[in-house]
Structure formats: C-alpha cells, structure tokens
Length: 150
Image 1 (cartoon, helix red, strand yellow):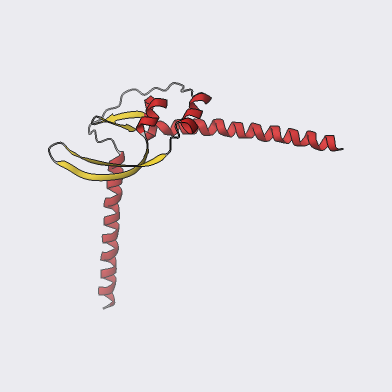
Image 2 (cartoon, rainbow, N blue to C red):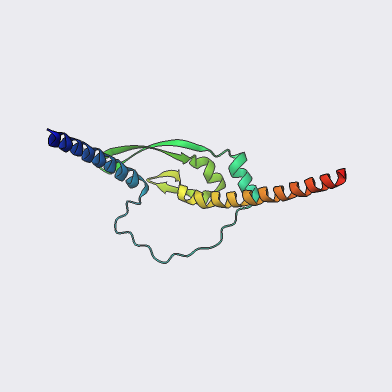
C-alpha cells in the first residue's frame, strides 16, 4: 500500500514538472527568434550617446510607461495558434523618441525591449551621477552652514 501511494505521488510530481516545463518552453518561444538556420556574421559596436533632452522626453514629456500588450500569433495558412499577453511599451510613443527601438513584425510595429534596456542603463548611470553630485553639494552646504553657526 505504501508503495502504491509513493508511486502515485511520484507520478503526480512528474506530471506537474512536465506541465511546468511545457509552459516555460512556450514562454521562451515567444521571446526567441524563430528564424531557423540563422547565421550571424561579424558583430561590431559603436558608441551611442543620449542627451538630457532625449532623457527628459523619454521619462517626462512622452510619459512612456509599461503597458500590457496582447497579441496573437500563428502560421500562415493555419490561422491563430497562440494568444500572448506580455508587458511592453507603446510603440507610437517610443517611435517618436527612439525610432531605433522599433521593429516591424508582420507589418506591425512593436517596441524592441532589447533595444530599450541599454538606454535605461545609460539613464540610470546619468541619474546616479547626478544624485551623487547633489549629495556632495549638500554635504558642502551643510559643512558651510555648520561653520557659519560657530
């Protein structure tokens, strides 16, 4: 009896793991390039500069915020095979500020989040430097204030 119970629990665990693995594979398929046999040639990099005007436009003027994006995908001739809900950014708002972060898939413009991440890192670095500069200035002012009180 104990053996049967143990076997049933083991089968249940295997089924749960199998189901979760299939879900994980489906999520990964949504983010992978489906171009089989893709060959990438030489890769080179060049500096990308973003000025404060563009940063202000991204963060404040356009009010670019995360949004839920729903889309369907399928194969030609088969129709819709999958409905997907994910987070993204409004392509129209991003296009006016960072047109290089827009990609076209089947005549639809979507935001290439992989292109947004380096820009966000740059913005974070600039903001961190600004915060550190403000801290230094504040400490100088505090020191001057304390000395003036003496």
